[in-house]
Image (cartoon, rainbow, N blue to C red; front, side, top):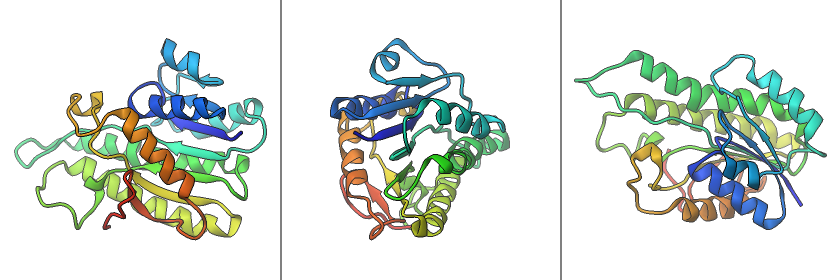
Length: 223
């Protein structure tokens, strides 16, 4: 049985990941801003009222999890994120800043705060996007989202290098174009399918392949 911590676990991909790991018999800790009945029923413990843009969150998470999680954290899934669009005709600096706070800075600070609860064999999965790939950008726009996910990829790569000596592996994972509220329920795959692919990639993650950037289907993505 593994201890799995998932941010943004109240809906969409995060909720499906919580269901998947709970069905495996793992201990699931769900972190979210607002906990609904479904995640309360699924998770072994739910930590709600967490705004990942709050500077005090990492310290608070470390304190709470040190008290509630039995043993070390085996898998940390940084799933919480926001998606907005800025174009040259509709630019919004506040939107861009918010996306960096949620999509880039928060995953780093949460991982840093929870490191005392992680050790050899632990894994960190950052849920990123292929929209953060510079090589894959052929359509432009989405300035804040693209840039914040590219920055998250850079953060994850550095974490992988820094944590490898400690035996902790890190992956940047693109779930696919998923039918969630974030994209108006458009998409090519269901949240359940995305969760299955992501979990498989996490299972395959090791110190030998740490630092990579993958699609949930197993395809290695260009930076």
